[in-house]
Image 1: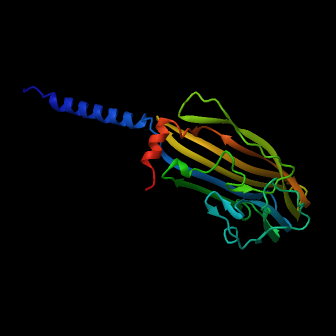
Image 2: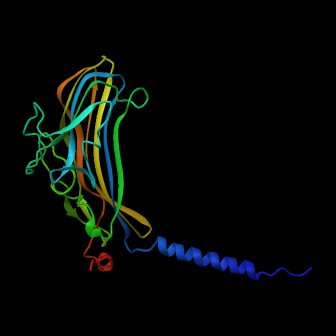
Image 3: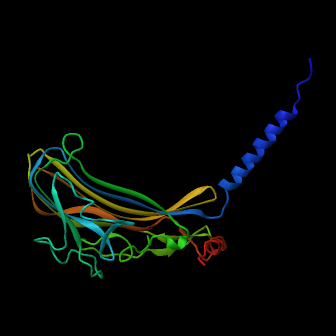
Amino acid sequence: MGEISRYPTLCIVLICTVILITAAGCIFDPTPRSFSTNTDYKLQILSTEPLYNVTFYLPLPQKNGVPMAGPLVLTEEYFASENYSSEFVRSPPGADPGWRVPGIDTEPLYLKVTADRLYPNETFGAPFFFFYENKTVLASPLDYADTVTPIGNESVILQKVNFTPKTPALVSSKDPTLLRYHSFVIKQKTAIYANYSASPTAWVNVYSQDLIMNRWEAGGQQRQNEYADTYTWFNTGNANGWQYANGFFSSGSGPYPNLSSPAWQDVLNATARP
């Protein structure tokens, strides 16, 4: 019998080795790339039993006076449903004018929801759940959302009770290509209006989240910084008027590009607009 040639097998091994080396080079390339800003917005009412003679006023995020969550412009049509009536309201009855972010002149904005009967439950009724998830691919890191000082610059819920904003301060970073901040997580109260009749055992939850994340890849790792603005409220039985929802506001979380470093200067030069 003739001897089987080893050369085809050797060629296959060499080709696989080259592919693996090339792939490893791409994976561990230290050059920052794949820039994006990601949005995760939620607004939900959940109940274990039907609610009657319902009225809610729920604060919405805004940017420069426009109702927005990241790049999404929130409209009355976005929240419309055949199961209830809804509209945007700036000054609901009984709202305290002091429920706002200091230094911001824009009035808070509310989603008013009314219904004779509302059963916000995906299994037994009709869900009241709005979820928006978006990834916006960016040409340059200069286009990132401002997750260090989002108040006044990005989409934020402007109705807050006794809120004192804080600005994250720079701290030392072991990586010269990255900046880091002393991030803040501020416990906050947001006033919502909830008025309805219900069984004494009816459990209701209202939840809102506005989460904005900047992402990129470098050296085989995904990097991310973010800010978040949330509130949640729980109740059992009837509800009558304005209520305090608990939540948190955080900013400056995660690593940030050090745009003055050589690695990021190369990126800026490569992505410079003509």
